[in-house]
Image (cartoon, rainbow, N blue to C red; front, side):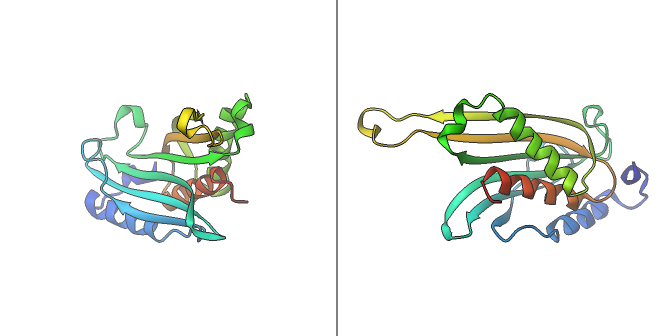
Length: 180
């Protein structure tokens, strides 16, 4: 992998990659906010929280998520590289989708297609797709049932274009949130 052979200082290289990620273009409905990254997983990390806002109502949040970029020059064995992306994307879906047996596979395919369309290549991918059905009772019985879908995934980027991975994940966020 090209990034492993760079001779520049790791902290400086990480800062350059973070600058490129921050400059990545995403849809205007997706709001990214830098948040404190996890501290013990890798020597270098940056994290962003995200909200997908309804284009018709700025106060309506359609989905939430997180994108974490980790860099460890030692290249942990499980990563198969020196970089690791760790993400999640969550949104409420139409309640009819709760019983769809293919929902998990569909959620994962949204991730794979989003990364492919962004030109983000990767290895060592892993993840889960979870659906949560909420049913209300007693004093809350008037609330309709709801379904949340959550895609949690991690992967090791191939190549130098880490920003493409953020762009692919951003597309996933908007897809999960129901934007065309």
